[in-house]
Length: 170
Image (tube, rainbow, N blue to C red; front, side, top):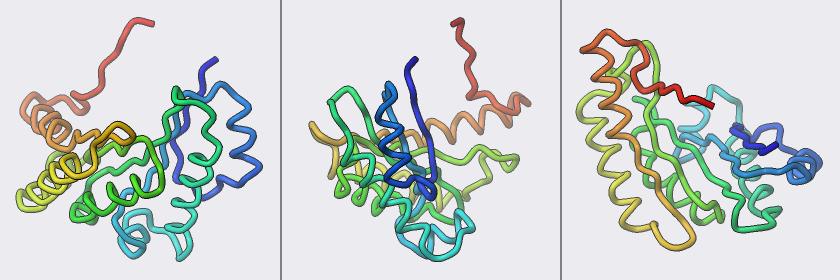
């Protein structure tokens, strides 16, 4: 059985990380969603210390990676509270040794209105610059902000709540 994990990292202790790596871990992603500590507190509604815990989780996972098939990434879901932290979070993900950062946009009942036009432009530009500056053989910026925002626009015009969900035969 292949194992994957998405976590905010707050409870990822050394013991839990060791246990995780005794499974058939294929990939893990730590949702950071912020470019700095204050932004992280706002977005995640957490007390002081959770920003550090999230990056410590990235470090724990990276430090235990045993082969190139295991992918360890950082997640960034764009909202009106963090749109200007895309580039910095991408830079930090690379500095911490992650294999990638996945940039997306929040899927909420607000649909495409989760960011205004100017906020979207900033997030898109920062994502483009992150790809230009950080993509390489050891790190990939998966920049989905524009595509996912367009999914939300389509959903609003077609009346589909979640047009981005795709089902596949298993």
